[in-house]
Every structure is written in structure tokens, then in C-alpha cells.
Amino acid sequence: MNTPLEHPDPSKLPKLQLFYNTFVRRNSVFVSSIFLGAFAFSITFDLATTAFWERHNRGKLWKDIRDKYVKTGEEED
Amino acid sequence: MNSSLRFKNPVRLGHITPEKIRKFQPTLMFWGAGAAGAVGLFLSSIPIFKHDILHKVPIINLYFQDNTPDCDKPF
Image 1: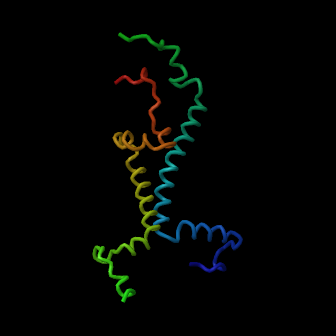
Image 2: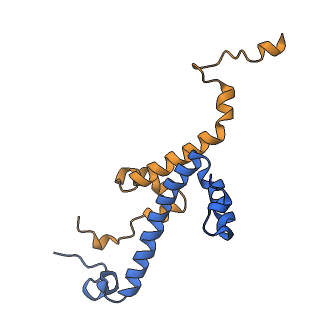
Image 3: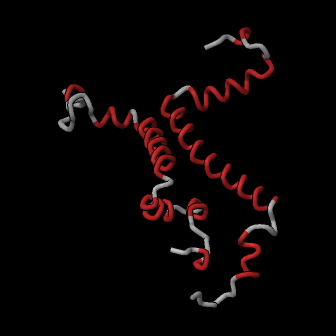
């Protein structure tokens, strides 16, 4: 491990040290946090981008204009 | 005599003994969580995995439910 003096900004070292001690020191924790983080990120990123897209295009999406074209309970031929 | 007998555990598989498993228990738990995360990540797009497992996990199932109304499903 690097000595504190080798770090370019010594004031940030305790956080890095905490990160290292929490996530990197044991390989089981490191690998698990990568996979679980990827799983969580895939969900949150999809939710965030979908929410942005639907907010940006509000009023133009099929779910917003469906009622103009499809009557509920009406059977198609 | 008792102290020498203490280490002769009949339950073992090669070098794997209950004592060693107990010692590595936290590590094995982390590996198990990591394996579960990997399976969830890589299989989350497979319908049978979604239906059988992800729909039964609380909180996460809210994301994986299909909220498309029936009138928008042509098939």
C-alpha cells in the first residue's frame, strides 16, 4: 500500500483509506460490491433515464394519447 | 489426552474441516452475496428467471413487473 506522502492530495487520503479498507481489502467484498453495484446501477440508471424521457416527452407518448384513439371496452374487428 | 483428541474431528473432506469452514464463514457469505448479485445481473433479462425469482423478491419486483396494459399487447 502507498504511504500517505505519495498521495498527491494528502487531505483526501482518509476517505480513500476508508474506501480501501471497506471495499478493496477483502477480495470477496470487492467482487461482491462490483456485482451488486452493477445490478443496482442497472436498475437506477434505467429508472432515471426512463423518468427523464417520459417527463421530457409528456403528452406525446402513446400512453398519454391512447384515450383519443382507443375506447376502453371496445372490441376490435 | 483430551487436548490431543480435540482436533481429531471425524467429519472432514480432504483438508476441509468444520473448523475451517467456520473460520471462513464471513468470507463465504460475501462470496455467496456476490454470486447472487452476479446471477441477478446476468440473468435479469431472461423471462423465466424474472418470473420465478425476481417477481418474488420484495421491492425489486416493483421494477421487474410489466405494467403494460392488456390493450397494448397485440400478441
